[in-house]
Length: 400
Image (cartoon, rainbow, N blue to C red):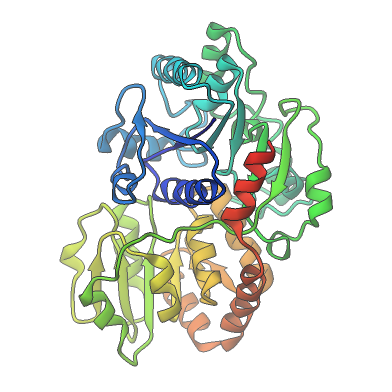
């Protein structure tokens, strides 16, 4: 039995698990879904996916605090959960796995599974590391960040124990294997790499031949799946559909899991001769609505991206891939290292740029005026069209 364990504080984690769930069910695989609950839990209900809530319920406020503390955003000497939370979630998950005869747990950022799967003797499959995996570090693909040189940014992940302290204290209490590094914290026994080799720049044979050394849990393996992004089963709101129908270029601002202040700063900075569509998700940004700006909630981005001139995102792999699948260039404002890498890969291909709110107007104008960005995005679109990420992910999980 396979159990999917999405972190429902993240739209991307829930939407990716929905893609994997459908692909597994299409193959007749027995699947359960379990979650701590959270902001985007309602998307499971909307998709008619049965699920179980385990451990203390994650409220919207608790999810918001988790996002403020997440990897690359919050202080490195904390672990996003308190020790008591880690213990309670890990033991609840392990009890659930045993009771339901789970043999493989698949997670999108429910990091407590690094403990519970060891406690229950269950194989762990992850997808949340994205392209932020050892072959990228070893090839120095991570860009310089926050004043740190490239060599250090790439050398650090398997050598530092940022965010691991609480996990290791609770691992000792449970008598299970500790987490040896920041890199190991986001990897499973099998880590799916939901990207095209053409984008990451690492040959499939090289990625899958990688073997863990110091700083990693023994037995960790990597496998490409191809792009894995949301296809939310919802229509475009009529007002959004009408807004996208005009002749003026539309910039789509979908900076999910980010502070509302950043979204406001970006909208204020973007070129005044463009129309702007904002996916506010759970934030109240209705005061930004004007003739030039339309604000909506959660949107089916796979229906929006083909109809816009530019996507402005934080650089999460899901939103970047949704844009690339539509051949739409990206302007990104990264909030953490994995997003920085995704955007650096697009820059290398000429399909996007990294920016800051202070530079957003000039960078957006540059992309909109230069057709080479859309041409480069079209090349990525062709690479993605040849791949079926959810199907490949399902096959990898069944092989695990």
